[in-house]
Length: 338
Picture (cartoon, rainbow, N blue to C red):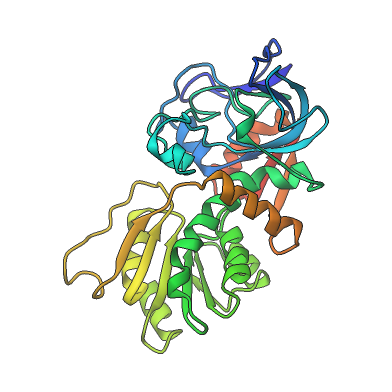
């Protein structure tokens, strides 16, 4: 089968022919219809996140058609369209037992620890990590497994702050942020939405997606957010970048007793003293999402409430896609279609 291979930092990804994986008793072989290209993949390519093996096939946002199943698999069948839940938990720790596999202490992540989905086929060791699509296009579903699942969990964390008329500020309107805008409208339709980004093109997309206010991050973000909220600030802020500058903007934008959720992993630091952020502000991180939340995300997509902005590209275009992602030239999500 054809697969992309990451061979190390500073080296271009290659396209190689690999042997087809053998299917174990609980495993499933999925023919990939779509595989998303995520900013998290750049952290691997740039050496900021290590991989368990090299060479390795990247790609943790995957969906496709079941091609073969193990002898013990009963919940999916050959021909089923499936989304691949990417936080492969151990199944035995207390977080997995509570259904929070994304918090597993002994996880296996496809595309980081084992081969992922930038290939014609992906081997999933246990069928519990598949969710049936029930008619949803797998190319559309692929980025939903992270680019929608991650903001879905983050938006759920701030819902108690979003009574009618209250404000959510979203920092970073890229692959995750453009989904967060749609998810927030579905879950908190009476909230006001502020979109913040350095790219005027992405801000224009945010406006089309329903943002009430758009702010270019090159200015005084905190002052502009307060001007748009009668001096109060945003009741909730979700930072999908996580750099020093965006975290500073989040702290300057949030209202008293508000909430900041940090999703981006750009390595920034949030200065934190008693008087440095407004009184009684909650600050938390949010990581990916669990299987039940993925089912809910796919249902939102089936109902037409959320639609990822996708650009389809072949596997052979991967190095060009990575270069464009580095340059910030991609709106929404690129989906590789082997």
